[in-house]
Length: 294
Image (cartoon, rainbow, N blue to C red; front, side, top):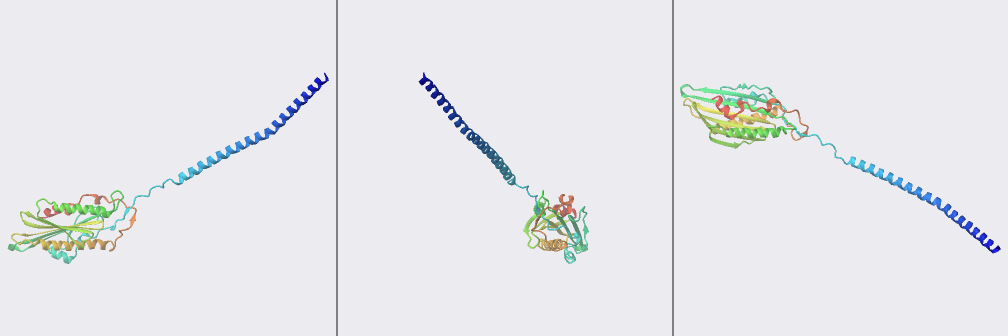
């Protein structure tokens, strides 16, 4: 009985010791769990913050890498801003050789003389029964402004120059047609000559087209021997016409201060005036000029 009581007492002590041990183990485990939870929480915050920061950095980097707005279109500035007085582009001395009976000329109408102008001279040297020598000269000038939609003044002038030469080479009824380049007359120049048979006689037509920067000069010169007078030499008329067109080219440069502003790229000036975009006047057309006055 006593031993049993002792066993019970030992058993109870053993149970109490076991419960105490377990309590101590649990007590020791609680801070570790809390610490682990706290660490886990901190680690999550750090990751979130890092992710947000990374996103923010990426966003900033993406924004900084976006291409800037494209620059405004530019076009080469037109070299010449005005035209010379059309009836003064050829010297009096040269006019006295080409059209001896009319050295003053008649200026053509224009709605913008800074863009389009022309002058014509008509000479009839009447020798009575011996016949007459007829000469007719017309000089037309057309200037092009630079424009972002149409291109530079030089480009537009070149296209117009090429068309003028083409038109001169395609005159209906032209005989013995011949074309040749002209040196020393601006950036490019071409002389086109041909014969036109009319009831008054055979007319020798010379059309010289020259481009100086953004200005195109079309010079028409024709001559005929009327009423039995000798027909003039085409070579002589062409040489005279080429001399006149070179003087006209020099006049364009002189009217603009003798210099050129080409070679610099800048924002285009205002669009070409209405008159510059029109088709050439009848006086500038080789085919019309050759028949209108004769």
